Length: 525
Image 1 (cartoon, rainbow, N blue to C red):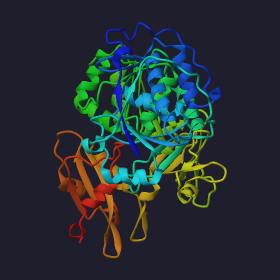
Image 2: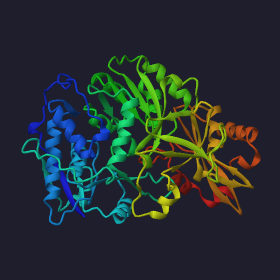
Image 3: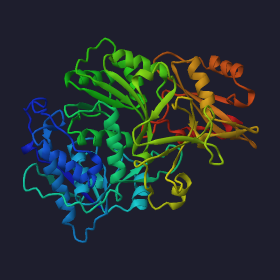
Image 4: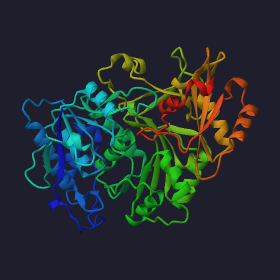
């Protein structure tokens, strides 16, 4: 695998332009008519060249610049000896103009994009590279180790030069992207997403979220994850502006950026919103430009969602549900349903079907818990080089077993009951960690709880890990007493462990594999 370091040519970037001044009217073409994702990107870039596509702390990058930079990547890849359409190209880049140019540049070269997290431990990268066999790694100094950068080729992203019309050699059915699953409970898989998958999901989201050509979205979600990738495409294909102002680690910095940059939207995972509620000072900070916020990538407690919705009024708050295998998003809980449907993931987004099935494959009755299944043009082609795992989750009719347990109410709204693969048999009873976690978190809202199944002799039991949501102390003795009082004996954890924070995957979900490694045989004996 050849490593190429991308270098920005800022000569065509505009350091002193007003990114709002060129927010001219733009009518996007229906995405269902696009030949592929690269062609759809070029259509937008060609239609509004002077509009700000990306805004960083240092400069403004227009759609004209972005198209030229993407062409630089495309020309480089096509010029490599032996290059063939469909080759995998890995991106190990933080959110940046380089990332966006590289992503669309790979598509313009008829390649397959394979985003990697930054940072990424060497063992996991070796595993992924062995699985997917990319021919090139595109990165930049600082996003990979100095050792990996030795001997790398430099590629300057030109903001000017000749442009070639896109030749749509890739069809909507062809693979556009290999998206890595988070690997929170095991080895990562590479999800094959086609051009049609990504275009369809972007089109569905543009029908339900108020994303317009004058939108200015503050981005903190890594583009290499499913949710971040969705935010990238929906805004670029709408001709909108992405505000890339670094990691913004501190919650107060996020709120300040929303105000100072006149952001019209913000999307994040539950962990970020929990931090905003605790430390960000969102309430009482006027954000007149804000139109909406959205959350996905995990469960946000209903009380937190209501607090957020109240804090940002009159802007709207949208709770969304999805997964990597469905190009990101499957369902939305509309803002007006937050109060009347607590705990719901809402209803399917346009062009998506959802149902709940029993173990025998029959459809579950309303109120009955079963496997949540999804179907639509956004559902993946399968897992790369893994037909066995693909067959386990995709049936012949195109239904995807999401892995989430759920029920549907009489009005067609869906409610989750945890991951099916976390069900554990304890003394003959099937127990889900969520059954323990919800009891604790409902009684102690300032606590985060994660129950981990462990072997105890010939039986399975649970260890409960606790971490504070804020600076309030957690009385472990009271948590233990609560569990003994409210839960049947077989559900009561055999041990309670306090942590400063629960470990998270790069997708900001609880890393249950890491929690399992913290349990020693002596701790549950």
